[in-house]
Length: 456
Image (tube, helix red, strand yellow):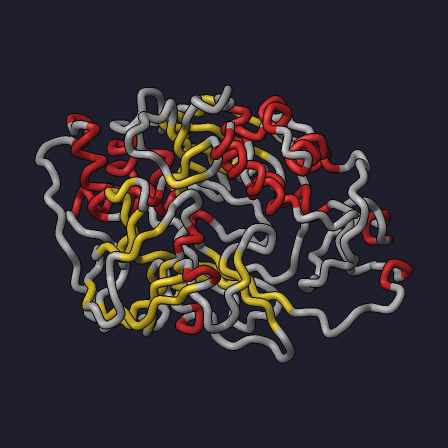
């Protein structure tokens, strides 16, 4: 059994406790009729199309590449025909849609012989770039697609999720041996430092393959959200010291995808997705593929208007019933849309509403159940004031109010002093949730990150 290198109990956390968790049941979804890939999933990627409508593709066919480094490609997870290319403002590419043929014809990759521990880093990168699985890596600072010309100081893997309605890692992460071990061995060739894996501290939701694998340092985290965020884990294990202190991160699915690629010589895009949320009638886990159309597995919704989110309610993307599963997502959340404005909502008792700032009586009575929430903001945009509550939900050495104000003021030097290199959107998502002034912290932070990347 792997040795635990660190135990961390985080106190400045918060559990929103939404109703609508997925039951412990895994079903095989119908094979999707369509899959789609969105450049927006890959921060920092400037896409250049490599296919046209009507082109035939296989699993592994490049669909678009990064203009600044054309070796970085995003590949198809299904065989079929390019059905459409959606564009937005200024003809920016929004998505590439593939009509699947159900045959899953795969490109094969030439894998070096021998033990992964003896592979050269350049050979590993070449295969990952050709297959498109290099896109699994997110680079910090900035939370962007990784740069293959950089050797990361460390690689961090989060094997836990504390977001609202988060699925169980032991069910949605395909950690079959020997794929996970192979993935870890490959990752160790890419870093000059260590591979770190963080798990839920009570070991109640840890895939057993992690505990029997080797070649990494294991860390235990106990606490509510955002304890499962890899940025929070980096802060406690080995903090980022500056712009040039580069680390890479990825999730468990990415590790397993890489392990399968190097053992089998092809991409296996299968993923287990949790369907959650109050508005979903059948809440359980489904086996499908990355990029699948949501209509192929989410099932029926409750009556009324419903918001269907790829990802969780804090950081996910509103896709609707005709949308698609995000590249990094392994859960879908369906919540009711509000039927209209609530008259004098601030004056209600709120026995069934979650509140961090004790606005509702549920906070005083220590209501232990789960809350039936919808997508309403429960208020409009107000003047941005410092209330002192933001730091109570961010277990990092950062003052989010001052950081956000420095971004609004476009003061790059101040942003750097206040920790912009250490955070991305998901790290401030809970801060945004508890904010009484309804500021969009995540969008503001991304604008600041982009400015520092350009001008810093």
